[in-house]
Length: 506
Image 1 (cartoon, rainbow, N blue to C red):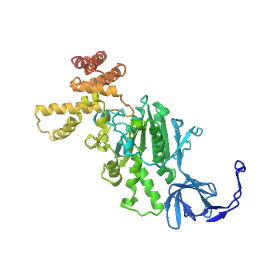
Image 2: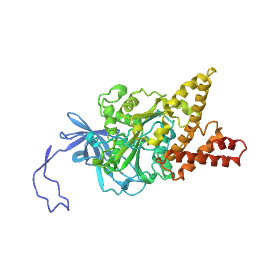
Image 3: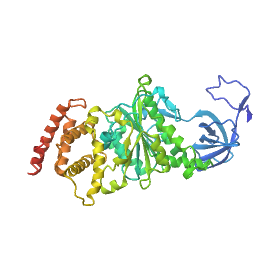
Image 4: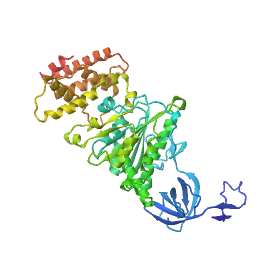
């Protein structure tokens, strides 16, 4: 610490400048490398404070030791080297917020990555913040439709819920997250997609997908590529959370996807080891649970007195060989309100989406599901789980009772109905249409071609019918029979057998 008496005033401040004795701390960079800088001589530095270095670099205080501090480099110049002077700025790290970020691709510090100008944002918000208190929260009672038949009917998600997407690499987790984002078109939900440590090709593909489906206009992407510094990969989810939190506080509904938190945990472990924190299980620091808990606890639904906004979180976690009992997956499962498990064996068999219903659960989404869908879905999940158990016996060639054979046939029909292509989200009206048709046995006995035609007809009919989820079931049933009759007429021109199957049910 030394007396400061030579600071020249800027031109703007010269009118208010008065000579006086000033006392400031001047630190010195002792070492730098791997995105981390060690600084000596700043005894009053605090966690999450910004330190400015004489070469123009900036760093975030991340570790306090008795004789020095460790900081994450946010920006750096080639001139940074040991011996550079460092000062505390008195600032904390903030992110630009607001609707000016919609349609933009930015890095975890808010800088544009899409070649455009800096986002036009009027506000800023600290990337670290407390989660809303209990008294400011409300029950999750409004559905968030993902466009997935399985999720929207059997594992529903509500606005303000935290639902984990977990599974091995390449089993469709990100595809479901993209479906969920695409499904928010015209739903008045602002979306935020955080990509952590992913290849540039994956980032470009995700941006192109969102743009192709018209979803980029209501989505902000926060990207920390695999080549980004460890510090930026660590900060990415918190930066995205700050943006979504600002929308939630303004009374809007927001959806945020963290893709993925397993990579984020590895970045935090790398940082902690570089800063010589004591390693714990699997070399992760002892506060790894707190890291993700404080991030995901910021997702909630606020009460009407606090604006009524919500932030729904879809964190993604990767497993190895389906082991969900590993350290990080177990932590995330215990933090979130449920999980959707993707099974690599189902994926290999071509059962898509490869969602393992037996290991998937939504603890609070049922309260938010619309009554009409909840009534039709009813015991469907339980019946489907029983079918999966019964189907095992058929592999041994055992002779089954007629009732069991009927349940197996119906289970296989349901599995065919739940099959869904990638990036092909279905509306809530479509979900209700096929649920009614299935419960009325209007789809039983159809072969693959007739079933596809029937589902296609139901989808088109529901989209242009003018019916709503609140319409009486009798109106829905009449409409469903009519759409199936239309499907039969359409197939009549293609083949002599298929239309008869559908016509008998219409």
